[in-house]
Image 1 (cartoon, rainbow, N blue to C red):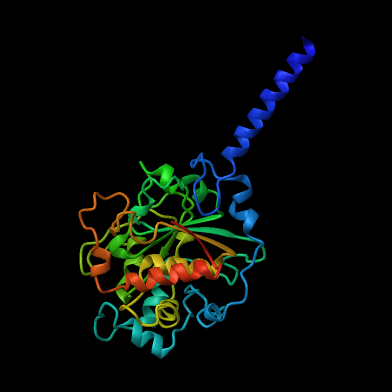
Image 2 (image 1 turned 180 degrees about the vertical axis):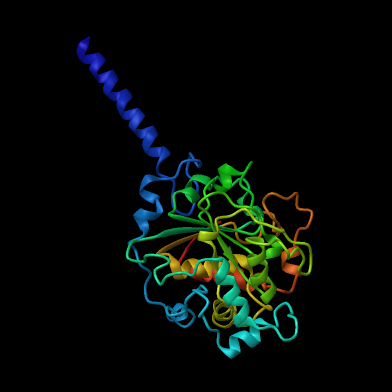
Length: 320
């Protein structure tokens, strides 16, 4: 009898191990029998050491020397960058861009050359706002990354199982601005000089309340963690990546290219149409389905094809 009991306990232990193994074996590009639990062997850090093969297509577009950020008051932009950038959303005549940049860094701290340390493997999740996230169960997988990048009016409350709970960097422009929690980097995507003036105002006097629409007078965020994308970086994406398709790149695709420059492992979630072919945000009731594609400001099809190509080249993991 003792021998039989030991055998029963052994079988029970083996069954328990099998169940636990099933829980933690979710494949990289699909859902296993327990989709809410990411595989311990499939965490971003476990895959980070694997580098992509040489790619002529990627090398023709990626410029390692391109810095994504405005670093300080002395940061100068080339005339071709300034000329292109000032046409995106219009600007007042006689704008003195260098004066605006100096004012910007009188309110915000200038950055050092080591904004991020690339000596270790950094894993990043770029989380778009597509309706395809709803019901995806990607939440824990997203939260497992070192950095979690979100954008615009992304919502977390009520969608945690699908989109996760963590945010380290939130990309926005004045018209899409939201308040942020402690420790989150506000990453400003400036499409016009007024956007730079807005962030100065939002962290000081609150005098700027209108661009082409009403904007937040003040913003709750850590001013010591504010990052400003350089107009040169936007032009680089427009020239090298979207290759002048659309007027300028979307916030989401901009965040993705930023991640390619800042992270060693990039995972992409929530881009493209949902399972029914609708383009909308995961928190919406599909009222404005397709609105993003109809703006003609961004070329959604070109950007989505680039994401798929990056995945095919092994440069990102694209979770659909």
